[in-house]
Image (tube, rainbow, N blue to C red):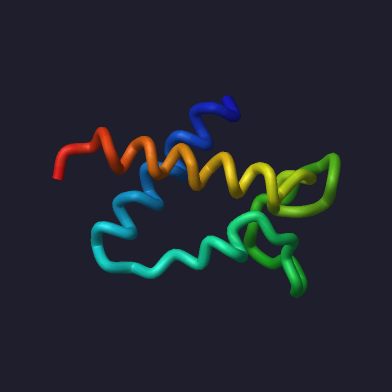
Length: 73
C-alpha cells in the first residue's frame, strides 16, 4: 500500500511541476507546524507525515525525478 501511495504522490508532483506549480521540496518531509485539521493522521505517530520525514521526502523526490524522465511530455 505504501508503494502505491508513494507512486501516486510522485506522479502528482511531476504533473504539478509540469503545470508550472512550484513545489516546496524543503517542506515536503517536514513535520506539521500548526494544528492538524481536516487531514488524515497516522495512528502511530499522530502526524500527517512519516516519522522519518526527511528520508521519505528525499525518496519521493527521487521517484518523481525518475518518473519525470520516463513520462512522455
